[in-house]
Amino acid sequence: MADREVDLFVIGGGSGGVRAARIAAGYGARVILAEEYRVGGTCVIRGCVPKKLLVYASRFSHDFEEAAGFGWTVGEPSFDWATLIANKDKEIARLEAAYTANLDRAKVTIVKSRAVLDDAHTVRLLATGERVHAKHILVATGAAPSMGHGVAGIEHVISSNEAFHLTELPKRILIQGGGYIAVEFACIFAGLGSEVTLVYRGENILRGFDDEVRAHLRHEMERRGIKIICKRIVEAIEKVDHGLCVELSDHDDILVDRVMFATGRRPNIAGLGLETTGVRIDEKGAVAVDAFSRTSVPHIYAVGDVTDRLALTPIAIREGHAFADTVFGGKPTAVDHVNVPTAVFSEPEVGVVGLSEAQARERLPKVDVYATTFRSMRTAFLGGEARMLMKLVVDGMTDRVVGCHLVGPDAGELIQVIGIAVKMKATKADFDATVAVHPTIAEELVTLRTVTRSHVREAAE
Image (tube, rainbow, N blue to C red; front, side, top):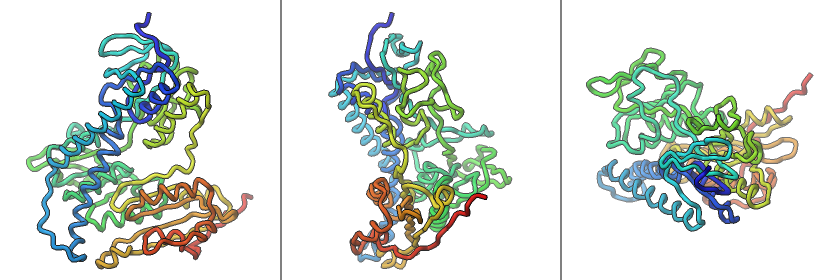
């Protein structure tokens, strides 16, 4: 017999699990949420939030350099890594307390323990041995860093988790990977003064993004001093007298102080007991779910990165809310994963929504592209070389804007607003009819008038 009975047991206290628990409790459900580490999950504790704080810190070096051009006299700046990390930790603790307080106010019972499934309706808490019978179970355990293929010296490698807790800023760091996390940390460390080498196995960084965006960002990162090596992988790491000697697949050696792998994340399902319940795991190692986040076992659900649908915090939150509405609110809700705006907090930033040019060419009979690069007013005033990229991808048959791609200052902020227009199926004519706000960077989006290039897909024979 179980020691307790509840309407919902949530495994995982990250963004998706917390939202689901709160909304379900608001509908009157009895809810227990189990979290074995810290409430808030990857995003709040060791992901988006602390990363953005480090991003802010890294950008001050550029601001100090540019201040003189605007008449400011700035003394020799100095940076203290320990102060940044200590202040970051304080903010994360504050946010964790806020998440916990919100759950308490919603009357969700929080248990600090790892939870595993004994059967399709029973969850066991490892910290106490207690068994809880649940009418519904939600798996929201997120994802964990994947260290890729095993290499000699892997014990010397850190992931993004450990990067937030380094005792000192590395003078030289090699980062393997080419996605969001690798690119963002490369820019963070470079901005804070580290000598950064980015190694990636693919043709170019940010696989899956628009090719023009990838090329533009790489150029800007290299211009800022980041060394980017593509079509290579790390073969071995050896500890030597003056740091770590990294051997690449072309047999080149690079001497650094730290090695970080950011080679993707894997769904965090190990040891949950899912195999005892009949929950299907897909070929990617993720929990397979339908449009309503239901697994192959009708009363067991999963949301967020553990399902590997779209690994973004706002998506996990929306999936958690939709789950609660569906199961406890009597409002069946499926989350739309199309035209989701997203940003890469690199330097410069990337903001994207909708189709890339290549995707549009594959799917649409006619594609018009409007693209421009330019120096912002601030950059031009200072005689700098940094350029902004703005690109609209348009369905040439309907005039609908199906993609927007930005690289430059505040791209993340801009793409949130542009995402509304793209989601509402705005046309290029709608953009053209909108009066520009001058002088701004964003005005370029409504003053692009000339088609840069068009592509007409040949009819299938």
